[in-house]
Image (cartoon, rainbow, N blue to C red; front, side, top):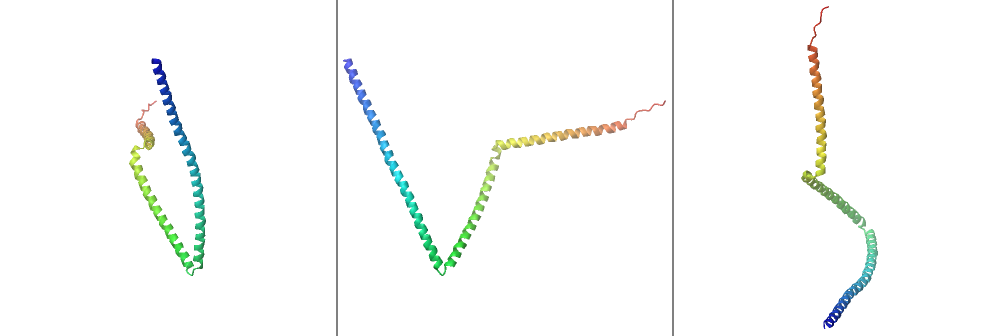
Length: 169
């Protein structure tokens, strides 16, 4: 009886394993099918987009040529060309002014940020400490030189004041 139960349980486990495997394989198959169909659609879309873009460029060139011909034939064609040129120059000047203003503002922000973060900049602090250390060493040497010079100046007058007695012979 125990043997019959084990056989029955083993059969149920095998069936459950087989079902789980089939579910897994169905999922993998669905993924493969979706991947294949998507790849085909992506390739068609990319090809179609490139063709549509090329067609739009060609149509734009045709329209541009027609507009240029119409303007050239028009009695006011020169005036239109000069107006377009003036407008273009004004736009370029405005753009340059705005760019300069923007760069100035960005410069101010960078300066403010760098000044704000300067106390936190370890590299800059290390360089400042090294610079100050060099200055302190230089000043220490200068002070030592001045002390030595003062000592030699003080010794000379002391030697000059000391007069040794001359013995009469």
